[in-house]
Length: 239
Image (cartoon, rainbow, N blue to C red):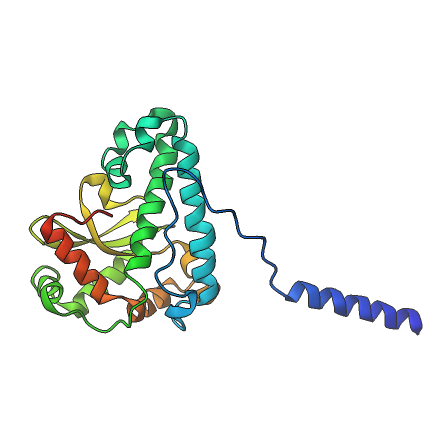
């Protein structure tokens, strides 16, 4: 009986151990010409729609990895290392062939995520002012924007992004891109975008991408998007 009791105790302790989440130590901050921007709000700011754990892992690990990888790829290419991130992406087909694919993936990931943190952390709702006018003019109104944007995210096969782009005249368009590709690679500018890689939503939504896409509108920062639209009209919007 004593042996059985000890066995039960060991099994119970083992079950308890594996029931607790275990996280590896956070990676060191990437060093080099490109840096990881801090989240502009606390990780829990987007609760309950996007959980704090997802935000922390997404920023501190995934985005940090893109920055670290990019720094490693350009360390032997001083001319590339000296370029602005947006210029690298605009000239992606001119990058050194040996590191071009890696730069495409990691520079794209860095730019996409830097934009992504900026356009969240808000209270959702509806846009106003010039952005609202452009949405009505070019995209058929706010409700249609949400439906078409969510469709772009849902129909992106595998990993990727849904974007709203803005041209020099202020005209908006909706598109999706695979992996970490960005409209910056085609000389376009991004007003805002949503990440549909599974690491952006899987802890909370599992395979329910549609639910994540619908919930995301509750954390959109329209004030920041309005600033980005004004910058696009002034020709100063970067990434």
